[in-house]
Length: 235
Image 1 (cartoon, rainbow, N blue to C red):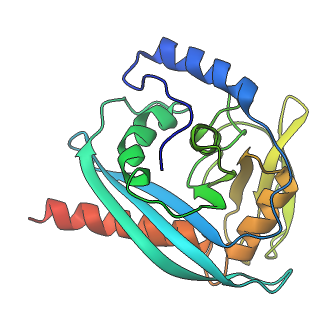
Image 2 (cartoon, rainbow, N blue to C red):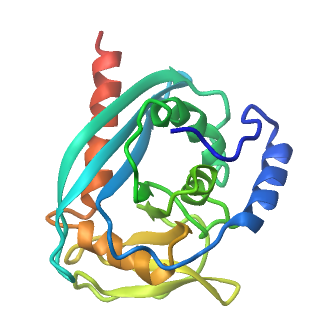
């Protein structure tokens, strides 16, 4: 699988900002297909002491879709990569830090992906192009951002029951959902990335949250990336 949009990645922050501002004009939000069979999830773990990234791409099949009930998924394929990360850690520019290490993993697969889910932001981003939007756009695949913390925006605290949610606003514009994915747990910050609506993103993530706070595909790749990092460090 190759990207349909290419641009430089090893750039200055000012250039990265210009690229984000240009690409956000191409982000479209359309209803997600009712037929989701294959989900890709990505995560990159880092160390505090060097510039090494531990990247994971997971492919999951939906083997049971019970309408409004939770999805049952099956892990089909896991790809990992360890490499240096050149772009600095700057909030709002994670796609320039993470996508370069993820691209070679996508290039090794030929599976048709129906939606990409990332631990990060979609349009809930200062320039409307978070990691999920950027990744979905360059591959022309629907994408959803499911972050553990807020990057930008204002919201009211949702109710404490699973499924409760409130709107996430940027300057009175709704850009995502603050979703209670588990009883009495901290909420997730869900926003559409590309070719997905705010409502579809919320419903999809909630269906993928079973026993845990994190949706299952993200929980799994997050777990693998941390294990990969620890095993490498202990060598």
